[in-house]
View (tube, rainbow, N blue to C red):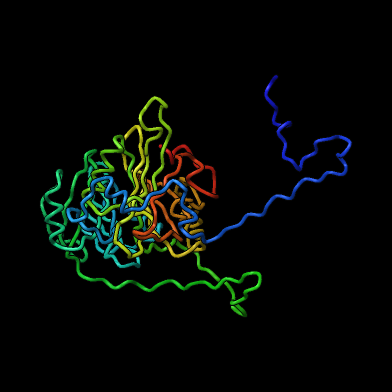
Amino acid sequence: MPPPSALELMSEDSVQDPKHAQASTSREPSPNRGSSTPAVDAIPNEREDLATWKKRQGIDSEKQVKLVRISHMRYQHVDLEKITTFLRDFGMHVVRKTPTKVWFGGYGPDHYVYEITQGASTKFLGGSYIVESYADLEKAALIPGAGPIEDLADAPGGGQRVTIVDPEGFPVNVVWGQTEKEEGAQPEKLVYNFEREKGRVNTFQRFREGPAAVHKLGHYGLCVRDFPTQMRFYTTHFNLAPTDFLYVPTSPTKSSPRKDVAIFAHIDRGDTYVDHHTFFMTTNATEHVHHCSFEVHDFDTQLLGHQWLAEKGYESVWGVGRHILGSQIFDYWWDTSGFMIEHYADGDQINQSTPIGWGPAGDEALAVWGPKVPKTFLE
């Protein structure tokens, strides 16, 4: 007997008997809904608490370099004028400039969120984290692949830095000793009118066109070939802890029915709430930086920023949409050197009590709404 066709597998409320055709009616489609769902309900059933995972991995927290927050990205670009124009249109401002370097800031707590060095070719120079103490700098300098402690005399806020090269050749920077900086003025929180809540009366929503002002660096990600080695490097040497893993099935003849191929990692600050992820890695045929991502104020800010970049003729990668893991509203673009860069808003906050979740890798795990994910985003 041939398998049933799609028509034969119609839902129970579809027409089954021609003589009842006129009496039958199709069910109305369910309206879309959104909710702020507790983590314990939103995370897949495949989960593990962080303390158990650390113990299983043999991670010694006392030996880790203690990161406080992610601070800024470092890149080498060829054309300083071109990338400066782009980053201004992206919502950053120039903090300091020399003939061969430019530091760009946001309105958040960091002196700068993006550092450029001019060079003969484009190059990824790593993400940068603030660490707890000078002792953490000394500890970082002992990690295999680490350089010496160097003074940041020319950089806004000063400080000292150690750059470590990971097993696949990616640099990661840790910084300590910067002077304090006050945050800039915060944008106004808009008041929204809902069906039965009209808190905004005799007050109108008005906007000014322009770039989406960047608050802070939120995260960056790498595409790697040896995922297990890279994951162990970052989660052993630093207090980077998994929030979510994505996996793919393996051959049934192997000892494990699946393997992890991507990690979304947060900075483990104990009970203090932090961003869902500040670092992610995914398995790829080649190793390269995937993107870096910067926080903006809200949805309107993001859409106005998207409109601004589009009108300036820059190339969109993917967006606007909303991610599932992390919940961020996203908008990805190519910069003028071919690096991917993102605006995001409304990301999740988690802490050490949030269970680690596991889910299957695939396009459907990337977004709940938005344009279809392009092939270039997955490369």
